[in-house]
Image (cartoon, rainbow, N blue to C red; front, side, top):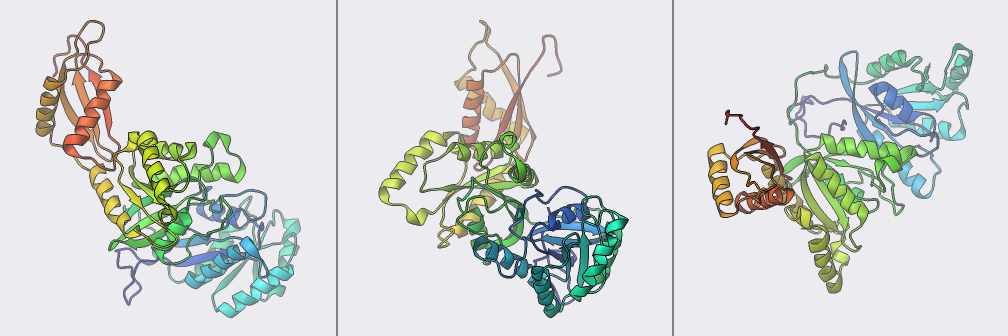
Length: 459
């Protein structure tokens, strides 16, 4: 995932976080003209959600792109209809807001339909913006339809570039024109750049994820509406929390298992899973006013199984009365006992209550996620625990625990060598004692058992 260059810059235009500023290209147009398909064509991968119905993209979503060795940021936007109302008007506002951070605009028009009144209205806005505009005449799938593209000269935005976002026809010429319109772009770099810690913002639909991201960012970065499932693409944002810059990824709410989803929801679920894989720590947002649900449990399980650090945030805390708080505490003990190690923050995205406490919780979880116990200290501890509570016998034989080593971090992974199988209950006991004696708040722990084969004298 990419994100628009929003870090502070010096007078030369270089970002103070150590990376060059990348120019920003905003892609705008009416609903269902093929903007997201064109974004995927530019990126060379299926990153933006695409479905053959209008209005799939609703937020403005940024991606890193390269062409001819030059790097720039592509911002996909929802369909722009100047006279839209309700949710469609909010989507249009996001598209208009994209112009405020853009260096150039790619205006996409459906050449098979021609220039509509809405296209002409958007063209007038773009002319007044003073930004360089590249006009893409989309859905020109063969030479016979190129004449349709020529008719778009009437929009007054210069030469229309015929392109087929579906088949890739003409995309090279279009991207050459885009680079010419953008400021000088930094060259593609292949070395790994250390950036801000990556945070996935997860939760079931309508628990307030986008509202929380907007509160942290101090602007309406993600589209918020009382219709569940408004967010469909992961939205990246650099925000400063607790004096530190974090890369937050607001994701689509997970209604059901990926294999049970369909259409745009299916691809949103895949991208949410990919966002978690790219993150280091996840904030799972829960609605404090509602009973914990199966979807909540599934999202938490998703984080644990991915081996990511975890923070639980209970939203809408300002709306709770005393009775609900007591009930919630019982639900947490009953339903979230398996992640009792996760830091918990009670917040209100609406009022900003306690959102500043998220940063310490994130740091705590990340510190644990990367922590290591020296082998000598680990084995001294293990010897004392096993001597006090030996493992249960199996098949009439008592397995002997030999030694342990920490095989890795992020998350902490331990391998215990023994002369026999250790029951799952005993492994859970060892994990509980590990947490009691060494902490590890905010991170899952992986413990595996390696049974020494008979006659193996290596250890």
